[in-house]
Length: 165
Image: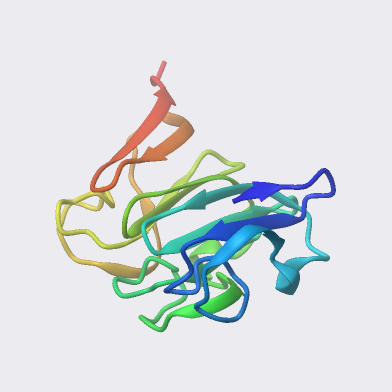
């Protein structure tokens, strides 16, 4: 996935779960505009094993692709072949700043420095103190630290943060 200067999202590659956002499950052999969100300027994007999450310049979160573990954050396990707004109550009045995806989980940081995670949680990679999957974004307690960046590995998550003073 990559951006054009206008903030358009281009996708290409394996499409079996709809992770290229073209409204189907075909492979996409060259960079192709994700036309369903063409009018929305994107500022960040991340790709998981079967899913994609992007953030608009306005701080909205969009997701598409495979969703077997809730990794799209849309409150179900239904796959989506075109971008769907992650309209979770936990993100109301929040502006996402950056995103990262693991194999089957997703994480964002908001402008306020909050971390939200969702999806597959077999190894505790959501940081919520248990191993239960979540299909909506859940705030991750960081106990006084100020998160600056988030990065997901396939089965773990890292947060770069400023220490409490």
